[in-house]
Amino acid sequence: MRLPRTASALIFIVALLSVVSTAQVKLEKIGAFTDASAPAAVRQSLDATGYRIVGADGTPMFDLWMRKSVVDAKAPAAAGLVYPDIQPSAVVAVAVFPKSVKDFRGQAIKPGTYSLRYELIPEDGNHLGVSANRDFLLAVPVASDADPNASFEFQQVVNMSKPSIGGNHPSPWSLVPAEKGDVPRVYQNADGFDVLVANVTTSAGKTFPLALVVKGQAQQ
Image (cartoon, rainbow, N blue to C red; front, side, top):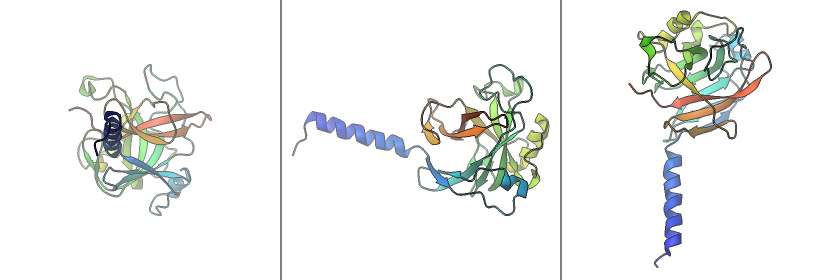
């Protein structure tokens, strides 16, 4: 039987939306962080509920737990930051990578457990065009990052992150402005990046959505 044009069009639209949705990562809520190898201070600093990022093929990419309270910025932030309320070098979350996945530079991060520390891309000629935003999280092996309350200089965090890749660069994970909508959720932004949005609360008691690129690489 031949379907009316309107019915055929609707079927086509539904099919197209299905293709789009399967191209994005999925989000699942999970329980508390239980990695006994992580320092007790790290385990105690995290929310009781975590998030599992699942690839389009149904394979988990990594698990992530937000910190209960992120260190609030101690001084007025530079202009143009996406998340000026967060203190540079502060631990924002902890992630567990069961397998190697690519960070924002397209580097393969080693499987393991990592602190994600907030940092800003330096305003110098070496980083021009890397990202539209300066805000990033750098992955630091949690085994060498026992104190989530510790504060570091930028180059210290860079050096701490280098073992995650095993090279001369840290492992950066881009932060972008959070689009309006439900929290938590994942969505694909205008740049084609798959983005996780989850709430973060600072030590000053301010809560706001933070958007992390979980899949997508900068143009090289």
